[in-house]
Length: 326
Image 1 (cartoon, rainbow, N blue to C red):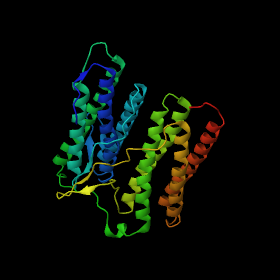
Image 2: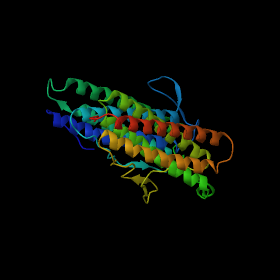
Image 3: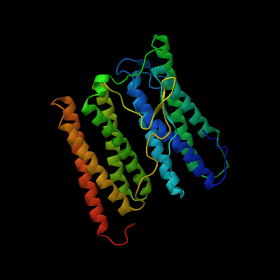
Image 4: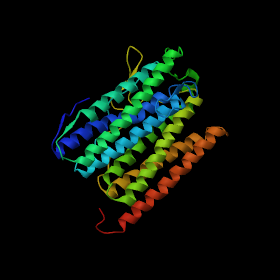
């Protein structure tokens, strides 16, 4: 990770936040991938901050959510400073062993903490931004302590050799599993597409908040689908990943970095066919999923996609009725 030592100008601020943003994008879903690669309700640890016995998987997911909110904060400030928030991402890695993923998670937290805390700000320059960066850095300090305790607990309990979930051959052959993988990838893409437009229109409170709501729904559904894949004998995939000789999966492009639409109308126009495509995929999946809890969950998710489409169609129609609307 590049180090930015001196913060003297607005350009320095944007550079620092862009480097941080590419990291935050990566870990916001790398942690969730790591979480859904380990068993639920198996690894408990005494959280050093909350002073409670916590499920390592559940807390790793929560940390990933923290990082997504960091991404949003950084992107909004970059936009306010005249920059274009990057949607490039640091590489995402999944190791064969649960503990190695947790060690990577702690390492990345320590790296970004150093990025935030080692920057030297010229006195009196952008004090509110400096305060935001320091506040984020202490979220990362907390995360590092939590990951460190998870690691020590696994070692103490003799679970250091526990392997991550792997997709069974039976699951890999099932058409509903293959389709669910495709849908889950699309949910991840849609979450970031909406966030792109949230940042683009961050000064428009009405539009940005409506788009943010939909982004959160896509994030929740990516999360839920990741859990559903485990129940079906599979595991969430990392987009564009290559398997290294040591068994780890590495992706240097785990999410799209470019999105169409650079003004209100073109952005809204791009979202409608994307939601329509996702709706069609869910409908195809529901046609082959038997009745039960899984089908009920997917049906609710499909319902929200239809709500998104309704909202987007009217946002576009309403925007088209007003001359001069940017």
